[in-house]
Length: 301
Image 1: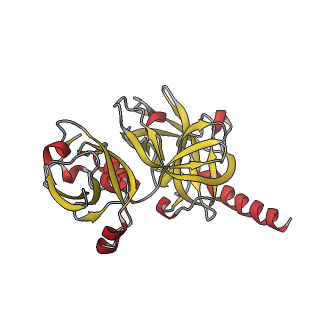
Image 2 (image 1 turned 90 degrees about the vertical axis):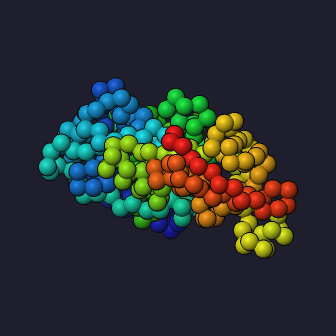
């Protein structure tokens, strides 16, 4: 009973802090949830807003606030809403860092599934580093490093909060992968960079390299020399892409991009925002036991 009581107290405390700060979203062609992240801003999913430009958000206290879409990024499935009124939004949530999550950690989902406002479910982080195909219509594009949870998610939860035991929002719920499986876009430094771009420009400019890969171990002898345990093993290099023109090949193990260590696909994506477009980008790979340096020049996606 003591363990159950402690668990219940934790979930209840998270719910109490977040329920009033997660709204139900009504757009012209879609519904979902949104999280208050600033004095006049809410974060939701791009697929919730769709092609819409304006709508309303409703809070559990009965208040209704008109909003407009300040920016949308289908490739991360994130969208930024801005309130049309000077006042009316609750205090913003506290944002956490999904990069610090561990499998088995308690998480709490807050949203408006099936139109049921202020719904709370709890579970654990089931897995990290999942990939989610985007709804952008661009074949082969995925949202990387998605959080998998067994906290129950249903239609309408999209855009809602996934929080840790301290009520810090670590994810934006985005999809139901099947019975007992939910997925959330991580809240981390990359997400904040995307939000800042939406806030400033209404869209996210991205550089394109043209590689597909997965994390793989670095051979022990090389790992000792370079202090690296994992890299990104290239499964595919898109023909005619900047990566192909630079000489990258399937089977290469990427160790550094832009002079920064790379351990997974997200490590590459962090280097591929607007400032990397048409700019020489050094890439270090391990090929047939030897270090190979190439210079790629990413184009705009």
